[in-house]
Image 1 (cartoon, rainbow, N blue to C red):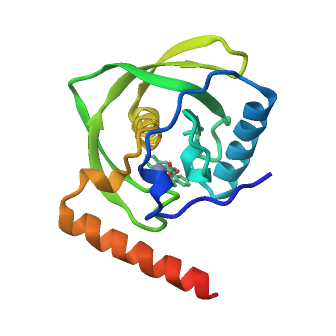
Image 2 (tube, rainbow, N blue to C red):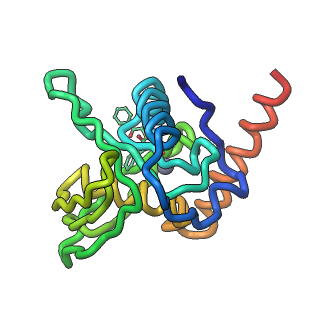
Length: 172
Ligand code: K1U
Ligand code: ZN
């Protein structure tokens, strides 16, 4: 089932999410819904607070080209355990900040540890777009948006656009 995606500004997008204590059937259903919502958007990632669930869970699949085999990933309680000194600049977007893009600089390579849907600990090194995406999604779990990396003028301009968009949507 597709779930509605919260649009910035929303207080739920600014909160630190709670660790998941139990990999339950309810959590598996949420992960399924989040993947469906992400693919439908379309997007390459989605974090639980974006659908109003304040738990440390994210989904992603950066195989965005048609010829690439999909690789849906579900990360529970993800933690960055190492980051490269080398940086990468990527023009990021966000499903909670539609049609706004800005360059963000982040570590190029990150090692991430998480729990999978079987409750098993996993660790993997992510590079390039996967590294950018997993950092963007973990930021969501900590109440941080990509616009928080921008200067105050740009951030305010984007926030005002989103406030206008939300007013228009509410009237429609
Ligand atoms: O978290 C989100 O809001 C999803 C976001 C993830 C992301 C995008 C770019 C850099 C870092 C993280 C998106 O998926 S925005 C949509 C998008 O980037 C995309 C959509 C379709 C095809 C390819 C990319
Ligand atoms: Zn986002």
